[in-house]
Length: 383
Image (cartoon, rainbow, N blue to C red; front, side):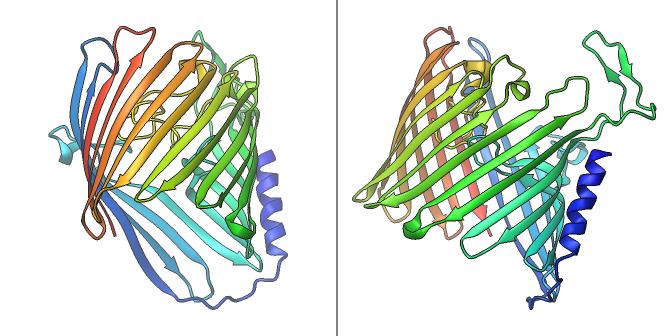
């Protein structure tokens, strides 16, 4: 009931604003990307294990706009899966020949635009990045200010609620069973003079299920540039109930990219304390550590690595107009284990909009018998 009241109040607020007709170019526009990838991952799971495989996908996104400025956005994903010789028979969202991961509408109500449908939620790459969301968003866009408030459904529970022993705590057909998981939040993106800006965000997860993992996450990111150096710093908070731990989690980092002629040097220092989970999509890690790149698979922070401090230095060099070479050195000091990583990567622009990419990484864990080695090769296009 609470979510119905909140949604109705938000829509009524938007409806009270003057609905100004905004001149827009009506029509449909398309864009997308596609790739084919080869993976070699050695000793990732256990000693002497090796996995080699291919996967590929084609994505097509369209935006249809009305004369008054309302719009609809959809995205198809075609054969987005690992090759297994049975492409035409695959079923399911993560192994299907055709499925949809974006489908939402946007309608302007004066200075506020309401978006509703299936979208992706991104607060920052560090704390909460690019997760699928069924949501209603209320968006204000000014010249330098962007505010987005949202209500999203994490889980509309329609099955029996069971405890850890398999006992039914509440039946699905119980009239009082409204055991949903909702999230409510707001994100501010503010630009300043000189290329500086900040992102501030806060969200509350309302878990009405017996797990009761309700709690708050919040953070602040500042970014900018001076003397050719680009830099960013962020601090984030995750409440203990969200993490399933006894302590509230805190994470922070500072990063910078320094240009040196045709090269640049990227560096980051970060911490994840008391169970803080660094999001999978955070790019400030190595090629194997951090679960970000094509061949990565290991989380920073959380229960996997414990309290973690890490440092990564990654130079890049533009060897030719078409070829860019890179490397990285990283050290990760965690409660559970510590690790040292070395990585290499290369990207070659085959044509405008198409590139051939190679990536390599090796990690030496202090407390493990197996040390992961990964290699990836990909052909990627955008259009």
